[in-house]
Length: 244
Image 1 (cartoon, rainbow, N blue to C red):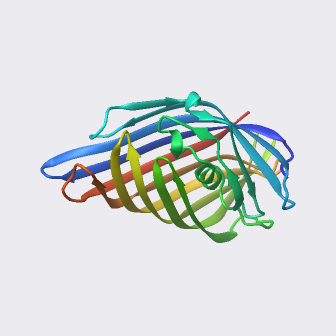
Image 2: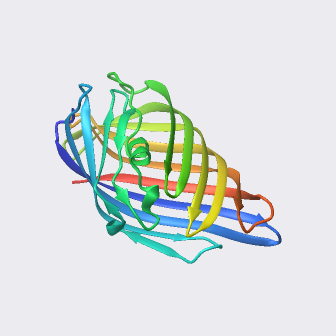
């Protein structure tokens, strides 16, 4: 259990999928900034029970096949609830009600991306561990499946305003596939990406302080209005930071 029962995290996402084919270059672009109030309590399995409330959201999605779409926190009603084990693996999840294309904000996605997979033991500089993440989510918008394998390494210890911080780098690979319906347009895409990131862990509070993840790779996308699948290049940047 963290020593602080309630904290606030700000999550920023920038996603770009570049398509090239049929003599054209196109882009699917999405950008979002979300603020979560995160509360910790004792869970049924002996570990923490995490409840995340979306306090604010500003998201924009643009595709070559649909009108630009914007979302705010009004598209999400309720709370994200999950119980992680000692490695940070979500054992059970519960999603809020969503509307207007906000189905991409689901409990499995939040539970598996907000926090890293930790070692489950005391670590020091030079220690490494390997973890894999596999999950899928099916809702009104469609289905998303993710499989990744990452290696984490503690690279240094530092102090930040009186806090003892472990700084961790990680890298690996991920496979992402989606079958979605966006504003009535059916889109399927699959990508294989390289993952590089870093995080800082507040050892006294038992909480992640911030993280940054960059995923880059290639894949393909098929839409109902396109006669063939088009090759894609994907770049996805996610930053998470705890507010003081």
